[in-house]
Image 1 (cartoon, one colour):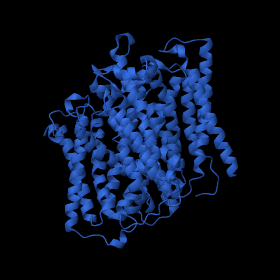
Image 2: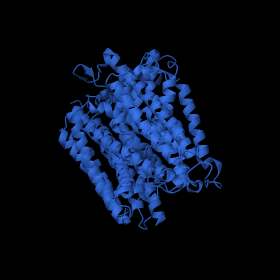
Image 3: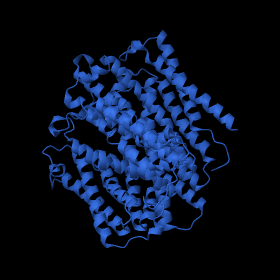
Image 4: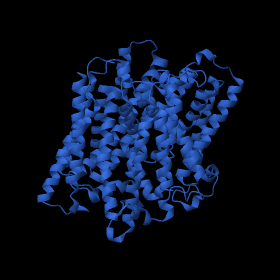
Length: 552
Length: 73
């Protein structure tokens, strides 16, 4: 146990739990229809949807993991926040959101049904539902692990208390509850964790000291990317751009319903398009918490006078302990409660995000699509609430499974490249090319998902070397992950095109409103140019380029 | 869309930050009289000034959301 909690810290933690449950109870009266429960009534401004969009992605696992990764791999981890996110978020806003939002769908699989057919929708819905429940369970397991390691809390108690709380407020208020608590979480994370960076920079002696005390392999963003051996992550610029910047990033940000659902809750098309753009400003700022905290921890651990080190477990460094160790170093009582609440909020909001996406996909894309097509709206809301409770119970089961067999964590790390990377190829072709057929999409998606899974297993079981995938002599797990995503995307892309050439197309009139070229999007003609999403996107690009040059 | 008027999310954010700001600033005031020496940079009393920043942010969100709510009713 490294964080000692006093009564004042407990008070802050208890207030947070009371607060999120209170929000759920308050919002229940506003969630009478399916539109209210699953899409938060489509009434959100771009600020609300944008912050929720970012928060759904900003779980505590990520904050701990990315700070730990920075300690291990250095500044390269910032690529996950910049080139690995911003171009994809802008692409979603400018090019894809008009088709998503205008078709008035409830979910991403819902788009696949309209653009292709039922089987492609169900294939993606089942993969997505499976992924969200697993991720939710893994998130729960990781949370219990963190709370036990750093606070000495009892395993079962921390898992059940947070699971019941999440089930309570999502079942009460649906997506609206999840979005409200995600925004609360956003502020808790900034106010709870940014102080670590501020105090760390003060202790080390200033911004420039942080960089000058590290070697180029750890403090540079691009200048050491020509050769995989010269940087801490062992990946070249090509791996970063193709694997992370293109496939993984576009696959996640443009097709993962967990985040895109937040944009669907916007009140109009402009707000929906502004959602990822608002989120991108804060996404670009996140390295100032996680990357800096990781670099600060690295510098302190190398300084014998600082008396700072990460936790060791069985002779191995626990990299995820970097952020909690910094909290323990700098935070007195009171602030510890705030820091712990920020992490708890991150875990719980991450789980709530998965559960709220799961209940929508289950209800609309599996239950309504396959099991019960003609029920009333109130029945589907009831089913959404049942799916929420069932989803949380299954997550708890997954968490116990992960506890019994911790090696499944490794498999879960790769799950995004099974589901999202090929789906991005399907979406890209489906949204922009008219002659892509339903059969092409289905077989392409299946081939992409299957090949990604096979590549992962083949490397894991030692049948092939990871260097075969990464096309270099040096392959870290991270590099293998980037490259596997790229190959899965490419296989889905090629199979979809080839099968489409020989199979029956959908009639053009069924595709109006779903594809570029057949859709007239009512854009914001009367708005001044500086309020248009395109103008905001240009500002984001300028900041993005400046950050990359500054930290080059 | 329901016709009942909903309090905005900014009201809840403001309320939470105000309460947290009061608690953390209070611990900072306590540390002026009973300084702790357990943490690095304890001499800066981060609870006090960080608590005040949270409190100010909370009050801004809280007040503006109340004004907005009343004007819409």
